[in-house]
Image (cartoon, rainbow, N blue to C red; front, side, top):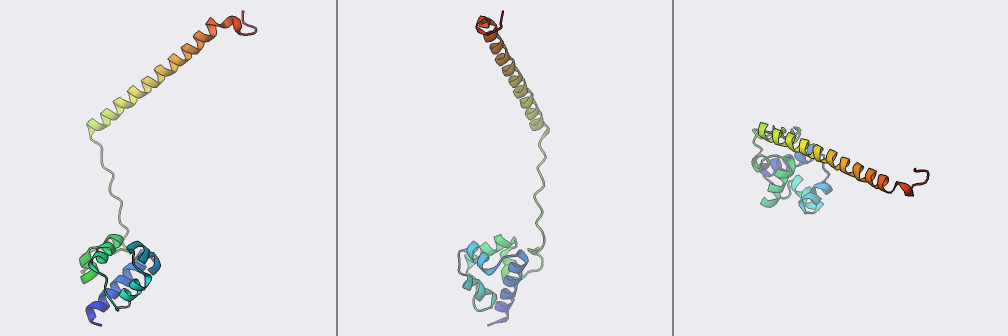
Length: 133
């Protein structure tokens, strides 16, 4: 067991703990056995390249960080910020506003048509309504 393998094992263990995963949970995410995770963290083996890529995605770090421990890469303990909401262009906002006005007008028009239809039905068949004169 060389020093690089030990450092890799320590990084994998640290990343998993900071992310809050159990070995079983991480194994499920990667599609490997819990024993494989245990071997990697115990410096008894190394993950294959495709698993290193998956680990980097899960922990939101680079593969270089996992393999080499470069300090310039943010750690998983840093809460990733949500992407800033994109500002809608002025033209897009105007188009949405116009669409809302048109839709609102259509709804009001439809309600008026329905009310007039109901009133027309009531007035034309008023003799059938008890108490109607």
